[in-house]
Image (tube, rainbow, N blue to C red; front, side, top):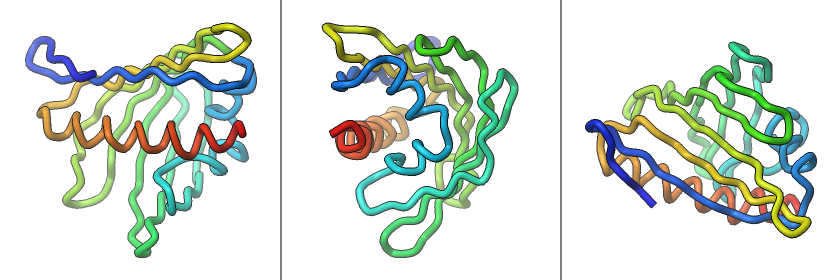
Length: 149
């Protein structure tokens, strides 16, 4: 779902995984695990930097099947182990939406499974929010779901 508040767009996604909150949190915070599932189908992700501490930075390179590399950077804003992860998000490629946005992930226990509640906010246009909504959906329903199966 995409909403608008104070002239900025936000998207919210909910996905349930057949894994404990601890396992799902580690999939987001351990380099070796994140590289196995992050990104769209066919993409390969290389984590150049990933300092999961408040103020710590991350830098990911995602290579598309056609060879083009997309680079994403940000810093961690809030970390509550197995409960919450929040980080800034900015694309570094020319021609790619390069505004800084904010991602917040809540890890919620639900019937021995984990529900991820992802809020990605501060988009300047509906078009950019829709593109991120589509990409998040594919990554979460594909890569992360497959990682736990």
